[in-house]
Length: 114
Image (cartoon, rainbow, N blue to C red; front, side):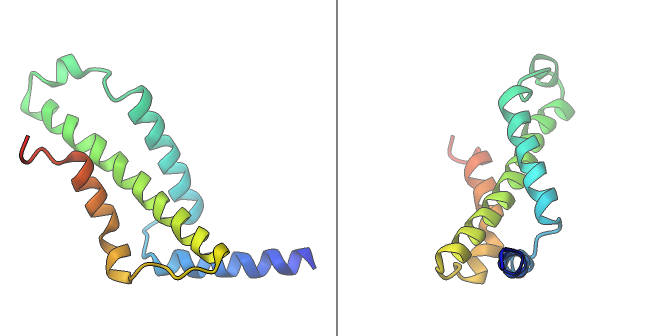
């Protein structure tokens, strides 16, 4: 019985993951998010003194965090979707889901108005 329940849950989770239109599998997405969080927390500032001196280095200082934040936001979407599935809640609208990662990156990395 437990195996049947797990199989059904796995199928439901797979359907939710497919609905999110992510470019990676569930495992890959969660692993990349974890690695990205660790990079932001522990390695982001390494080399900053050198990078700030060149255009290429400054570009890296902006691009690298935004790429990591995108990975984390994609994993957050997975957690949101799986939680909704388990609690029998409706997922947010598809346009919200499709734009979510872009909005998070913009919010976290925008320098407009500063």
